[in-house]
Amino acid sequence: MKKQINSCPNQTEKLKLVSMLANKAIMAIKNGTIKKRNLVWLELTGCSGNIISLLDAANPGFKNLATQMVNIIFDNSLMVAEGQAAMEKLFAITADDYILVVEGAIASKDNGLYNIIGQFNGQPITAYRAINELGPKASYVIAMGACASDGGISAGRPNPSGSLSVQSILNRKVIKLPGCPCHPDWLTGTLSYILLYGQPELDNKDRPTMFYSTLIHDVCPRRPYFDQGIFAEKLGDKSCMFKIGCRGPVTPVDCPVRKWNQHVNWPIGDDSPCIGCAQFGFPDRMEPFISYNTTREV
Amino acid sequence: MSEQHFYDKDFNKTINDINDTIDNLYLTEDCYEKNKLLNNLRKQIANITMMMQNNQNYSKNNIEPVTQNDPRVFTPEELSTYTGKNGNPAYVAVNGVVYDMTNVAAWGGATHFGLTPGKDLSGVFASCHDGQPILSTLPVVGVMAP
Image 1 (spheres, rainbow over the protein chains, first blue to last red):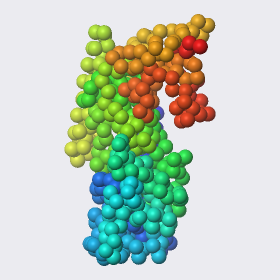
Image 2 (cartoon, chains in turn brown, yellow; image 1 turned 45 degrees about the horizontal axis):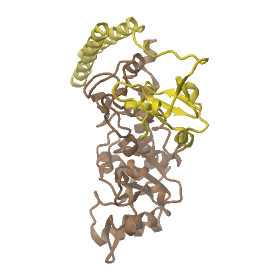
Image 3 (tube, each protein chain N blue to C red; image 1 turned 90 degrees about the vertical axis):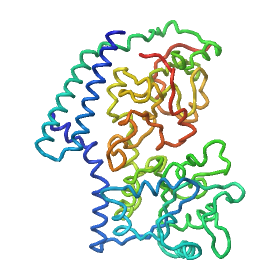
Image 4 (cartoon, rainbow over the protein chains, first blue to last red; image 1 turned 135 degrees about the vertical axis):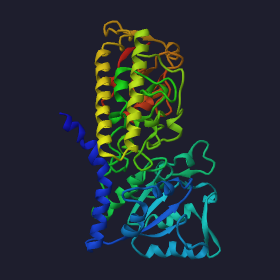
């Protein structure tokens, strides 16, 4: 019985999954069975938190991804080229095969003028124009993070820039990886799967089921407290944070198993409730993030 | 109250011990030391399990029983006082039936996707959960006045 608990596949296999997929993809590329794909990374209306998150990837790390799995054609945070030369690279890729990763929402108000991502032949290129030109021609479009997936913080009330999700602009399949930020594993795993087999299995909101299928609440290490009615009254209490507004029961993602900062800890592990950042509707519909003086104890 | 307080205190202490053990596990590289810490962890988990079993009968006994034959009738004004705030239960009406959302997991902090209790939420319920077998799992506390 003890042995079975130790080898619970939810804990062990989920963590192995991403490195297994990535290693398989890297091997297949080395063997020549599959080819490296071009990757275009558009940072649109957001905070660039998703690329920062990806740089923190481990096993496989970002270096494996960038050197052994894909050719990063354009990423304004990482590329050497700048100005006109960078924009030329961006628009030249539309003639070739590429996977498009988008982080950030798309500012749509006033013809998208609230987000200029560069100058091309003297013309300002808005995020709105970039997504409209690059989105339809990509072989896959991945919306990475809360803003790209659902508008997120960029589209939060009162949304002065008229920010929209990638799906609101593009009339095509968009794989969504919500999270603020997106976990590096969620992107690496999805990309590896695409390289190896094509589009992964998605749920009814186009999120890969390999990461977004189980409610946090269902595998939360503090679940026994909920079942016993033992609730935290303030931040820092080491029991179930349901009464102060935990969104784990409405957020289906694998944070309890995968954890963050190279699989070390996660909000609930540090006595802070889940704020539902990987659920659609974040942040406006997940607020208030903390509630005091709520319902009575059971 | 005192019994619950004692239980919480003991419980939290054990949880703190477990966290300390886990912290130490991260730090140690020595295989033997690691095994010792893991054994410790098992003991602490066993303690927790025992405490939980001893207290299983505690709690969940404060909810007022509702008889189906004599349902409580709510006016909209009455319903609006059950906001889930300041110790009040969180009641929500859907299609004329009043449900107690106080301990429904998806209503953490007595809010759910920006919605608050004390109201008739039939419209939004239909737009989000149409066809899902949710209502039958919720505790009923009464009906809305016709």
